Image 1 (cartoon, rainbow, N blue to C red):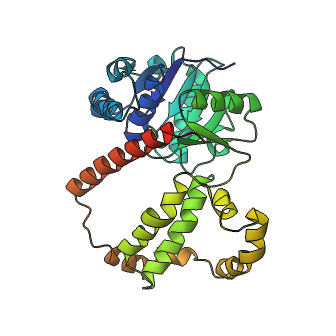
Image 2 (cartoon, helix red, strand yellow):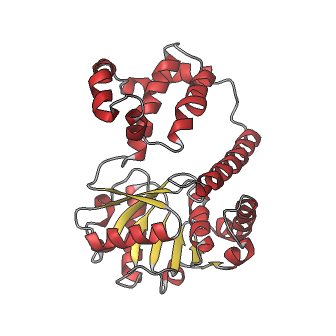
Length: 313
């Protein structure tokens, strides 16, 4: 049976690591945060406190001061993971980096500590095969930012034990996330493969001049995205034909077969198409713009999360 609260070690104190710290701390867990970059580690507690205050304004954390107090920094990986129930790794997105970090984690962590990577693209078999404790290693891929978007994709290697997956699933659910299980390894897991299919078509439609970049974004955020914020694609099509999914398939799959036969290919991410997409976006990515949009995104996601938490499925 999973612990209602426990100790979470967060390895990597960047954007994702800080968000994970908030997820566990607001759920009552003790959190130890570490990062090899001293400035990043020293800045983390105040940034976490500020974001917890934002969550509190939306009713997403009851006591932000208490949550912040449960987060401490550790000078080393060994100090951070001592007695930890779960380690959430957020290091560089390279196989070599994962190999080095997980080798250290496996050597230092207690045998029953779950070792979880936040990687968004690298399957666990590429960096855990040679570890003595490889059965407790898995992917826990979040959506940025994980303290506001609750999905987490759990994907083990062929040697990851079912018990490790089950325990991780229970822990993430207990701290307020929505875990899904990827039944076997696949590059990109589930979310990024779905996002990639949409993004490839978006690059083609804009690059080939069918629609402006801003109108493409409106199509998603003021169209598809409104439904997708509370309905998945299968739930959506169930409501788009009187007889549900079987009726939808009978009516519309001929059209979708035509689209699939001419799906966007890898060339949409190459010149000249990618140059045309960049030219079509009318904004410059200045630090000020990125900071403003990030803050606005987080505020709107917090409001949406608060709304969804009040609804009953």
